[in-house]
Image (cartoon, rainbow, N blue to C red; front, side, top):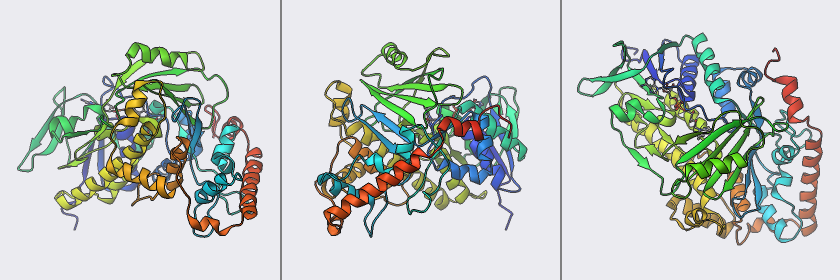
Length: 502
Ligand SMILES: Cc1cc2nc3c(=O)[nH]c(=O)nc-3n(C[C@H](O)[C@H](O)[C@H](O)COP(=O)(O)OP(=O)(O)OC[C@H]3O[C@@H](n4cnc5c(N)ncnc54)[C@H](O)[C@@H]3O)c2cc1C
């Protein structure tokens, strides 16, 4: 034991992926020397401001104080994503985090809701979600359970400033012993029969040697693609958006505790409220509109004064054929890209790190271990991809060729099966440990006007009056609980406003 253990890890890149990897490895693995190389000249992608609740597990893993983290990243809380104009122009729905209502017997809430809707006793789905009800009133508190009930409380994630997040994680990592080298990598040295990476060589000739290399070099994919030529699986035929225009703006009012995703003629716009500004961006497909038009649409739809010149980001949706190749594991943009519609990229980094920890190699780099990692990462990517495609495909818009194309395009078989099962039975089956839970799919499917033909027959066990009472009780509890929560603004001011000492 111990002979072939990895002792030297080199992380290439100091964006969100690089510093998340550095923080996680340094906080969880003893006897590892970890060096991170980043180039100030190249910089980071600088976007990536919305997350999903699983990030709280990452925070717990690296042992950071949540209020401090929010303060230092000028963050806000996020209860879900509000979608505008996706199914049809004028539609609004929320994909709220957490559960909705409560299950009864063996059946989840949504089966009763389908019956209740038919019988005119169920209101909007969001009326039974504390997250959505609180979000609409700009309220927030940490509340895991609604007191004296069996109803879940608030499930939350964060919005934060991406640059401040990387800086914060750098502080955490360096305190745990991670060493940082600033410099531009000019070449990669490979060796031996295996062709494994032995060192990255900086422009000044310094060679940084390692045993395990984590490629967090962003879209450049310096090791996994430029050096190892692993290959990329392109998904643009399903997710054709290929650019984004991003611009920060002044806050025009209190920060909403949710992200907004507003569909436009050939893509969609995000609004992400932070303590000190709002992040805005327009993701679009360049086959349908020009950059100038995309910029004009964005600037016409931001709420406060722009704080910088709009900038363009180009991307290609898809994933690396293998996220782990030889002694290189790619994380973040180097491993693949799914557009930020459901805020899943930072989660995929976290997920890649968690799986790397679970499959942590020794210097033999056993092929079975690498294959298992790659299979699991692929599964996660593909299932999130399906969920994102659903938003585009399930539309009834007739106003723009982009939306018609998205509706008429072929979709992955795994997604087609999910939609078919839902249409016939009103059911979503979550397979394996795929990320999005049944109620998440349900909110998007019904929010975009896909309604099933029936509901589960067990929902008939309640009489009509019992069913009406069931909905009325939950709605009352949710409304009452939401109305007693502090405003989002007050909660932040009290616990985690930037500039307020701990
Ligand atoms: C438009 C857009 C919006 C997004 N919104 C969200 C969102 O809301 N939520 C979310 O979860 N994710 C979002 N993402 C994804 C998110 O931005 C990334 O997943 C995250 O920032 C991780 O980036 P990264 O660290 O992989 O790459 P980068 O930030 O690009 O970092 C790459 C690093 O590699 C270094 N590097 C590169 N080449 C060299 C070299 N030759 N020598 C030395 N160093 C080098 C760079 O200096 C840098 O430090 C978004 C992405 C885009 C494009």
